[in-house]
Length: 237
Image (cartoon, rainbow, N blue to C red; front, side, top):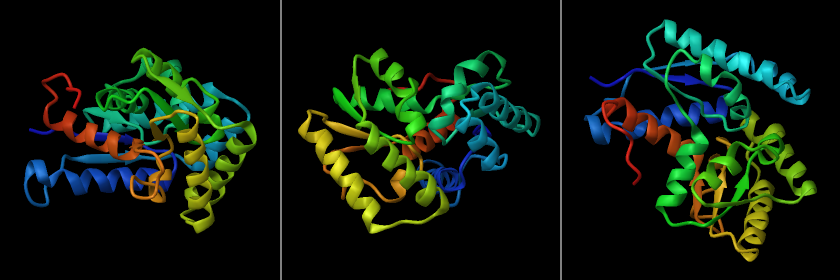
């Protein structure tokens, strides 16, 4: 029996991509058309954005916990959250969670370690890049995390929040991300973390100057693996 995946969702484009990835990749392991049972809960994105804008991490955590409790009540066995930014509030709620939770940054850090990367560039919202969500998990693995300069962080944030989250994909955004990633490569990064679940909608290994760690795909694959092999500890690939 595969376990029931609960998705604690925040922004629609990233959550939809994660959901679709689970449904698309699971049949290779489970057979045609087959994937684990999946449920998703999302409060209005505006609720999250207003908390993030005023730096209210307790509010962010309360929203996450509310989704977690609803998913638990309808039978989810474990939880994932395809949104990197709101993991800032994870430590506030981890002891109150009703179900196990696969932490997106931990999964990405494990993958970075397994691929023998050492210095990771991080792209995501300004909130995420300036938080400890990734730097902590990467340093646990002995890895270094680099972020762009402040004006670049602000511009990346505008692209994510004004365009990608709304399903708007512009060639100029791709060009800007390519420039930032090229600069990371020049400064010694050997891979880049797409640390916003919307960034893989426009950036990938084919158009990035550095190898990418796609947080959306990695959390989806981890959820499939966990749903099938929940009796075992997840391996590093």
